[in-house]
Length: 251
Image (cartoon, rainbow, N blue to C red; front, side, top):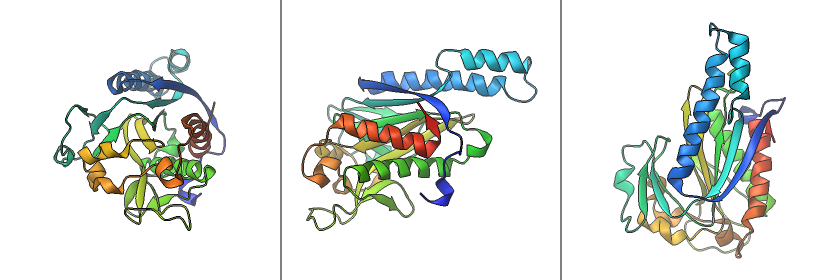
């Protein structure tokens, strides 16, 4: 792991919640509620807050006040990040809902067979570097892909996780292909939104957009690269483990 993305030495607790398949807007609202709960902890423990000790304890005890990792699959949906070019990169949505949200980045697609992870994390003072946070998310996905025999890495200057495929295996399409898209938001040092790893995703849906400003052909999946479907539950277990390590959290 690069030195700039080392996790905290003492893991902090978080909850891991597997939501199965759930609509995008519903999970978005869950994220916002969790962010608000974590912000109460931040505000109650801030220097100068009235009743510092008791307020911080009450906030810590509030429902949903822990750091939380949500894991989910969404029905078909296209989401637009804050990039001004995002809407221009929607080519033809047809019957797929388009939702504009507050995360960073451009346009992306979510759908069945894709594992989406939303870390709602209150960053402590030693963690408050959002570029490092993104690199940590990338590292977790890279290690997850390696666990299934697929080498993956970063693309210089681009956020997300890419691959050149299994060594020695022939693959159609671009030499460099994108496995995982990322886009986060942060409110008073509480992160939300996250990453989308293509596992057994129907890649044809990316043809409705220019994902993250790229041509749709750049997108790939674990199934496409490995030549057969991958059990999403197994990918979820690996991703949970590696996100916990990369972010310094433990369930």
